[in-house]
Image (cartoon, rainbow, N blue to C red; front, top):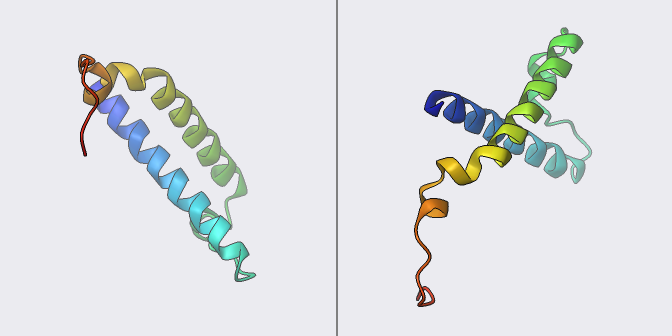
Amino acid sequence: MKILHKVASVLVWIGALNWGLVGLSGFFQSNWNVVDLILVKFPRVELSLYVIIGVAALYVAVTHRDSCKECQAPASDEPEVL
């Protein structure tokens, strides 16, 4: 399960960075959708990749608490000092 979580996390990062570039490119009236630029001739593969990234995001969201060391840490009574 640890490998599955790592793969899902990488896919979520790829998706997040891609959407960040898509949003940023909107300010410059261009297309920085890296997935689209790479898979322009394979629209079904592109759509499948988006679905896989979405499923990975759901998996990470559901299993995050079980795999995150900070979320598993016991709560302390004292507030954290920065």
